[in-house]
Length: 476
Image (cartoon, rainbow, N blue to C red):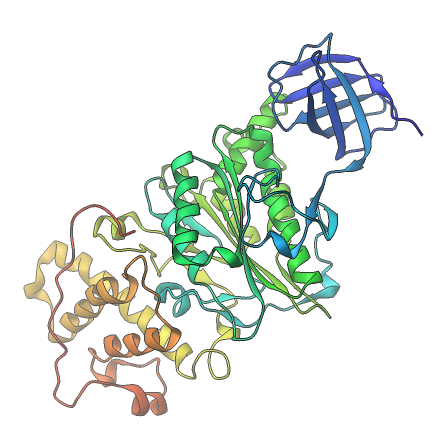
């Protein structure tokens, strides 16, 4: 059937084109828009009625005139070429090469909307992904097939942390591993930072990078994470890779969603975001996981900046409902010059306990992480007490817990930007810290592990209280 060319545009609003008198148009269908000069742009059907369609234009509607623009509906959904050769490449947000290495030779072309994994075919996430970052590996372990976001805020070093995880993450020896890194709404300086970091570290060969810049059309921002996940699904479920997908910044994605919703004159929900934002985010996050009888897996780390540092804002709030925990970056730690400023107390990995211990990380991991968490929480409370009544009111036991809390931040959480710690090194450092405390106060660690790993000599009193760091600026 020949394609019909429509010249019945009734209006253009922002990135949207409204076409009248259409027939047999489907939601998600790809559209070709041609202006009076013959230049062509791509679009996608955002809303389809019996005789009317709303089209979102990827390259923006600048230069389009209602009377001189024609539209053709191509009868297929938006697809992207996929291949194992994309590893090491840099693409734009619409999956077009921007690295001067030529086009992509496709092994297949896949619909970018993918398919949510059927719960019946899902396998429970398992196996440890080592990031080299102690506050993650020991305290909030990342598991294959998990979706675990990073909650950051404006001015915090989430870009540095994202690049560090992309460079350092690894799975078991001998397994195929890849990283798909998607950045949305970033500046040119941030794009240059990511490209330079991946090349400098030598890790770029295992990383596919998609970059949507702040001056790119907002509509492109909506397809960037779906492009990234389509590449990841091909690598994971067709080629057997274990794929880590890092997406930053989901706040920019949601702002683009709000902009399109406003252009469609939809009734807004909380803080002006569309009421379907939860469903839209779920359609992205739920594309992580492991599938029965398929060797690969997809693990997601979405990164978002919380407006006004507000964790109850709709974006982190809805993200938290869908995902399996979160890493929370702390402005207080950042102001103490701690990098990465991961606050382990509000952070959580809900799948951690079933995937650490003997045969996974190390036999003492569960007990040690639990004890470190409890001791650090008590030490944090003591910091607040000292601020009110002074250190003279502390008992000797209190001083040991305060020392542990200070050293936990200064030595365990903090590390250099280029530093990578193995899980063994991390756990040994954890034992050095809990050995500050008297053995009788370590109630969360089993006696056999105390006998094997406890480092404090009888009569020892720790290595002295470490004063808190102060001053601005984070590492990296």
